[in-house]
Length: 429
Image 1 (tube, rainbow, N blue to C red):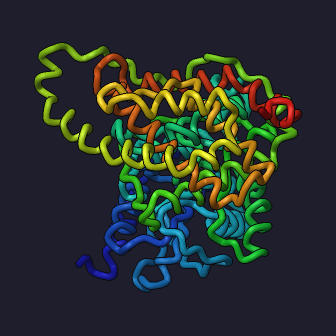
Image 2 (image 1 turned 180 degrees about the vertical axis):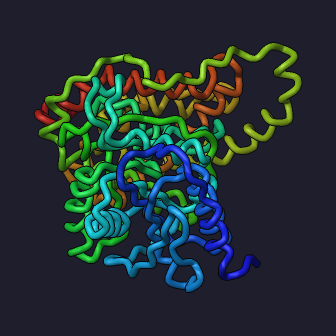
């Protein structure tokens, strides 16, 4: 175990040099284990040599020897609002960050989530440097929100790939690949806006509520930029079951969509427009590649089997509930899927788009209890995952390319959601 003053020794290694971020920078950390905190401090020192930065962490209070040193200062603080979530940024984190920034007269904030020690030095620097600067990708506007683009494995972050990213891109016209990123660069006014939203939740004792910075920036007219962040360790969810995760994350997204309907209904997107970052366009596998990955394909088949079992069981038991949410064409599509053998199971992108949009509408109309509604979405999501794994394992398309095509399909069919939102009865059977 490292000594109690190891962090102070790390801070003392800061070297003088050219300031890389010309603003007063606050780095707000979540609670981290001691070794993770020490590694994060070391990365920050390397990312901002000679830069006067303030690192705020609730863990610093437990490290009495970790005091200011060199150009990096540690600020022990007691959170104004405490969060029990240990894997996502929550309302409490945004509120604490703005209060600290205001007290310390910071103009640029980095809010880093759990496992922050796995974020690269280059990513830390890029997130901070983007804020306040003009960017060609943002039309020359001053940047208020910097969002990282992580390099995750093809079977990581699939809830994000299936729902969060394509829906956010279609409704708000932004190509940020991770709308619920656990690390963010914020201007002071962006931090203030998020804190104002967060305070509504913390005042109601909902400190663990999720916020959606992309949509908040979009409706405020703030410029957003995505920066490459490389690989990152993804925090492990506290909840063990998928139903709970979807209820928390997708339920929060649907609620945010409902609250911002007046904005996204009049926001025009460019259907089929590519993401600002380059998608994965790796070529199809050759026969040699395929023979080298037979064992991986076997693992995929093993993973797909229980997903399809869940879908087939749900098709029998939840069909009546789905019929309250989905129109006849979608139900017919699900019937066809239920008859497919596992090796050729593929869900058309258009069907998945309509399913998600109809669930968004059912959430708004309270067609049934929202917890039950999101529970009924879970086996359909598993069917999409099984289809995605089948499709990409066949080598005809890379995972990244498929996700980009799916996002384009959500954009193209946005008019369906807008029409159903305004005239829901028109589409009922």
